[in-house]
Image (tube, rainbow, N blue to C red; front, side, top):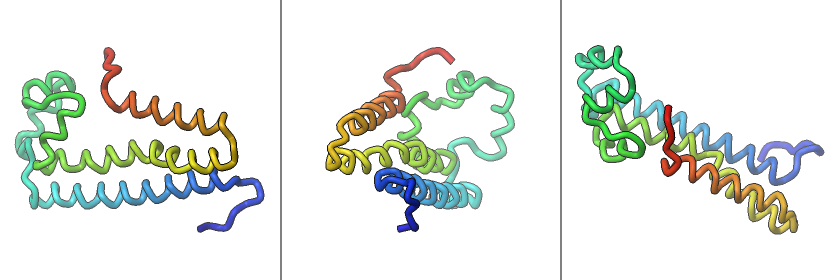
Length: 138
């Protein structure tokens, strides 16, 4: 554990450590999945020689013409190299959620119900936002 400042609380330190570890794991996986894609070890859904055909399209048109579902539909395409890198992106996006979840028990042990409640609400909001249930216009 890194040296603590007298101005940093234990939950702040733990939160920062979780963010750091999650960031490194996500970046390492991002590098690994990109290498799998770039080297051709895992075949892409869109062949590299066809990518330029999609560049001029809007994201909606691209998804429709390529036959890719929106939202969490990418999960069904994880066998392809160009979708494999979505896993570390999702991990990086979820690091904040995991970090909040790790500090809630500390806050409860300190009887800091207000911050524990706020952290819990933040987790719920982030999960709801990531779920795709709140789809809106672009």
